Image (cartoon, rainbow, N blue to C red; front, side, top):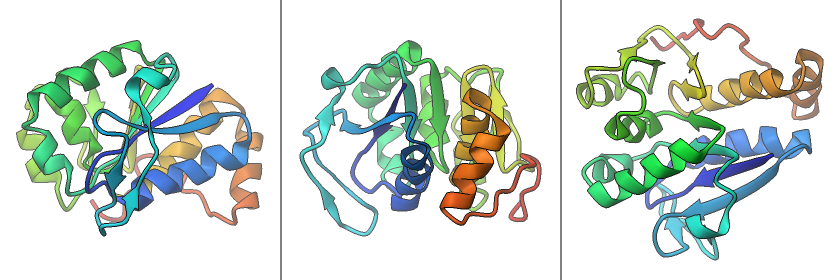
Length: 194
């Protein structure tokens, strides 16, 4: 199964590389990084990431992972980006978002009438973008249909383990957590930052 991680300028690195670490250690996924523009992106700290795939070079039927970061504040107003994202979400088997990546999901309207969460420091801004979503303030992550959304930054790692457990087994996910020396939060409602 492909894990297609969408990158854009000013994405939050841990939103991307925390979940990627989980999926790469699982050794059951093809993790790919792609953009919707010029095959390059920068992290929120200015580190350039080059030679990325384009959306035309990936199998869009896999898992789509959307990170957050300061770049989401610009992209929520980019109609072309949101339309392309909507098409990718529609084709994907699962869609995972970390932190303010849910702001981009909110703008597609594909989360309407579904449970979702986001970074608690940006929660008011994200929830103001779409009132038709059933926003969960007290959740580390949520699952609704094919959508997994997580709270801020490191919560994406716990969400990734929950997803890994869903598509494999609890024992398998626990073994991966042990391999990377990570202590999982298993309760999606256990969010010390809400």
